[in-house]
Amino acid sequence: MTALTKPQPDGTADPSSEHAPGASLHFPVIDWFDEHARDLPWRRPEAGAWGVMVSEFMLQQTPVNRVLPVYEQWLARWPRPADLAAEAPGEAVRAWGRLGYPRRALRLHGAAAAITERHGGDVPADHAQLLALPGIGEYTAAAVASFAYGQRHAVLDTNVRRVFARAVTGVQYPPNATTAAERRLARALLPEDEETAARWAAASMELGALVCTAKNESCHRCPIAAQCAWRLADKPAHDGPPRRGQTYAGTDRQVRGRLLAVLRETHGPVPQAALDRVWQEPVQRARALDGLVADGLVEPLPGGLYRLPLT
Image 1 (cartoon, rainbow, N blue to C red):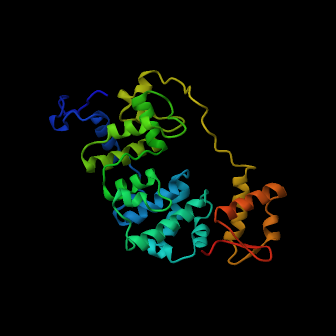
Image 2: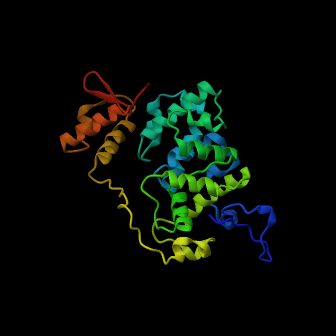
Image 3: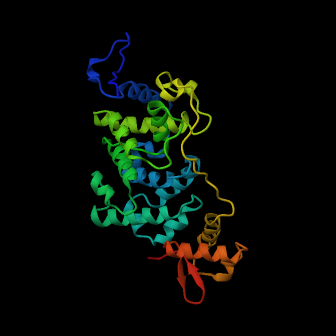
């Protein structure tokens, strides 16, 4: 990759940039972020590391507008990890509401319990300790370390991967799954300074969320449009594997959601008959219920009763 530098007002290179790779991307994107970033509760100082962690769990595969009300209610009820850990895991599933992918609620509860037991109730700042928590993968560990503690990590979510694919690689979409090449590129683009690297992580993510979107990208509002490899190549169409769709209607996911809705709305065991009423097709309904039990989201009881998990 060509070494790039931050331009000074007179157009000459800034020698303090030390020819850092990607600097011509860093500064326009960070400046844009400083002006256009959304005021989100998990970005405020009072959110703390726990607020950041909760937001990262909730935002996986879920848009901000759906997360906001649940996030606010969650932090009001459980302002610290120990508060959540003291409750039954089923209460986390109940409070998760209709965010979808409810196993995230169980994982967040498990992480809160581990934080309480291992770290005195404080979300650890160390990346390795974050990664060792249950339910925390590489992305979430890097995101919490970067956004909560200002550390230098490559934070690769779908939005960032799309920005890098277009601006640097020159393709419309990144691969369906994160590749080693993408990780190498993300590390190569990281600013050396920790504070700048953390700002870059947040700024590149916001750019993908608001401007360099999956559909109807707004190149006229993009601070790096003039150097975007995909735009300069006249936006060649995606020629990789088909992009995965997000079907829902009629799927086991929909059945699972309806079954969980009955259990969330009832404080106490629910009879099989109440669950049977939510979906007509018995084979699919039984498969969905078995899956919820196997995932630890539903606890079967004697007498054909079911409840959210207590342990």
